[in-house]
Length: 310
Image (cartoon, helix red, strand yellow):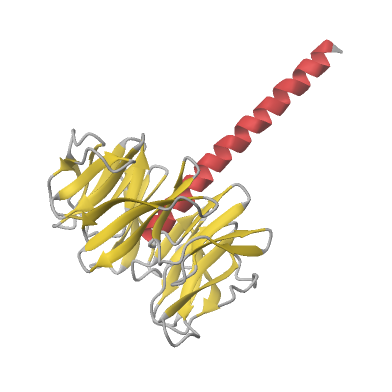
């Protein structure tokens, strides 16, 4: 009897560990792809937080919305029960702010001279791009340090490493301290990147296709010739992408580069693709004359989801 109880306890522990690993892995993938798409959505536990473009941050839980802020927010990131996000101050400055998950205690962390609405949090440090290069500071806004002084187009922080694209459209990497800087591959033409597992995904303008490269630069392969721009999001076994020519969002299964499923038609020529709560959030033409876009959502297979009311 004791052995049965012991085996049962071990099984429960294993299931818990697997569940935690799955949440960490899949959440990380979603966050990476979302931040590459302006970071308009983030999820935690049973709630989805998204920028109700351009009405502010709302929390969506059990089919109901609750307004948290009233300003357009980008790069939504949850860290220690706070939402860190960016608002645009003007053409060349952004402001990093925080707000509690219930909408209280909104604070300004720092104003940064940059046009890139993106940052990452690693080991209680904020990593972001300035006009001088990649910088970091404490999550309270103190102790700013330039860790990589170079012209950077895009970057991503993953497991104590920084991957980036430079002015020559090469992909490089270094440690989060700025050491061990190296070019991963000179034989690419990349501006924006997404890191998923051991792969660096990027759209190559010269080849007009989506490629991926291993983090060590030793293996490069075509993902799909159907992806013809930088509006895509890698999630699970699929790449969700914008088909500009046909004004639609589609998805293709990785490894099946010429097969795709159409998900939704668009009324605009550009959009951003964010994934949370097993739903695809995207921007489409606004019904409100005071703004250009509004947030919409569908199921990941293209089936209807609860409409976001404006």
